[in-house]
Image 1 (cartoon, rainbow, N blue to C red):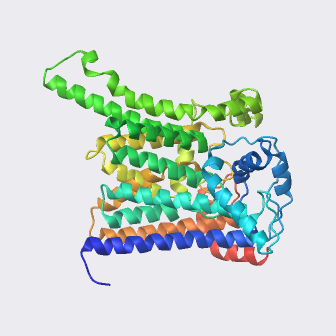
Image 2: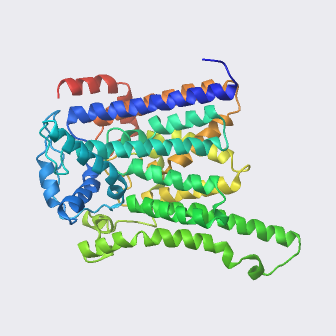
Image 3: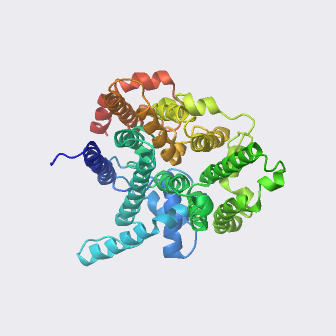
Length: 469
């Protein structure tokens, strides 16, 4: 390679590290897909089956899809992937299926091609080519979201700090698991959409650009169709507008131009928010009508009823959120399972004086996600690898991590950053082995002591689990 500037060398390595990450992600996914024999399972079935039902059956009744999949055994161990009662309708929204429908269509074309080549694959929307391309679509969008995260970090921070931050979130956060072993779930797609949304918020002058306001509304609306909790990221443009108004009020009062609030706040100030909010809400109407048709009322959807059905009184306890547990407990605590994300929060706080509007908006958006998850009856997030419901915050985490590494007040901070990132990637990898080999239960409580002790034996236990399976 011809030697160039430090920036050229950094970009050279950034590109290669991205390709390395793509190779590792696809390698793990494809190996798992080949061994297991399918890619859609768990909650992913609830997202996948309405799409198949809509295209092949012309309705949203998914009992026949579940029945078919319940008899589809794993190649590796002979297990089945449906072990619960078969529902008539999916409790999940249609957004995931809509976003990935082009990839599902590619799966259909691949199936037809395989048939012409003599390969016996039924073109019914439920055989392996459909699942393969559906999951590859999810992975591809998730990786594209990480590219956007990198670009967002590069607006403020160095290439080395930015790529370290992306590597940390890619392989040392819950997103890693849902980009590889459970790509059929909604987390990678949600991360992609919200990363675009936040990037447009921080990289464009959207407040004065109606076209970008419409774009933000459409992206946020689609994000909320994939994961309804993503609507809370509307707080970012709201806070940006509030900061804009407050700054103008302070400036005009200093200049003694006006003291009347009506002269300082105008309709033009809130029109951008009205456009974003209206677009996002309009995109929810089809799902609301579907829920009304399926369950008789929007308020009867399983998400709002399952807490009471499970003996928790209600699905949300807004007055007693389990914030400490959600962030720090061994039972899927976000910062304990994924300590690199705690460094991201530290990085955000370090930047609050330099960029108060941006950092405050990010912290509030993250805080709202924490509060929602903490108030949910299933605050440990069900059968979950760590804090999976925070994957949509990936751009915030990448930005905060890049800030942390660029502001680390020690010599050789880049080498320290590389070492810590690699160590925490290893920590996360060992947790994956614990989770996949049932050293720790997929949903039941676990203690910090269990996790720490198991980390020392995760590799031999996993190997033994594979050999004796």
